[in-house]
Each structure stands twice: as C-alpha cells, then as structure tokens.
Length: 153
Image (cartoon, rainbow, N blue to C red):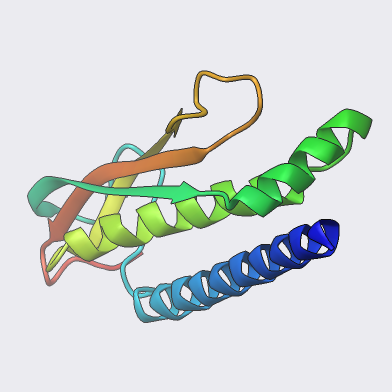
C-alpha cells in the first residue's frame, strides 16, 4: 500500500512539474513574440550605417529550479548515460527568460549589442554530487539608441 502511495505521489509530482514547465514555455514564447522588434546582437559594434546617440548597460537574470521528480529521472539517466532532456529544458528556460528580462529592461532603446550570457549552478545541491538544483542565467549587453534618420539594419 505504501509503495502505491509513493508511486502515486511521484507521478503526481512529475505531471505537476511538467505542466508548470509547459506553462512557463508558453509564457516565454508569447513574450518572445511580443519583443521581437528589439534586435539583440552578439556583435560588439553597431554597423557603420547606424549612429548611436545613447547607450546603457542592460541586464536580465533568471533562476530556475528543476523539480525533484525530474531530478530523480535525470539521476537514472546519468547511470546509463545519454541525453538528459530535463536539464536541457532547465537551461533553455533560464536562458530564454534571462534574455527576455534583459530586453524588458531596455525600455526605449533600439538595439541591444554585445550580448553575453553567464550561467551558474546554485542552491543546496550546488556543491553536492547528486545533481543540479537550480541554475542561474544572467544575460547582459549594451542597449543603444540610434539616430532616427540613420538607415536600419
């Protein structure tokens, strides 16, 4: 009886975590579509046809945690080897969220150039060998306002 209860709670936690992850991915997709007009470039300089009139550092940070049930599944995959999809989605969500937050902080600027992304593992399990607990992603770049009569990219 206890094993049935344990398996039931394990399944409930897994499906609840999956539903929350899908909801977050949907939110990210909608916000990405809404912010598509603000280009983010990894180049360190604007093209020659654009003249900057104003610039500022912009940042965005996101901390995303993997749920306990997907961590168990990832541990099992680590035993036999292979692609750990639950960690891939964790890092993907954190990266996309950090870039979106950076874009949201850019306000009235026309471009973000010199995009850089840093990641780190944090949380109680960061220094333990049993897996990732949370991942932090920080996105930062230079927001640039260009002359309105300058040719666009």
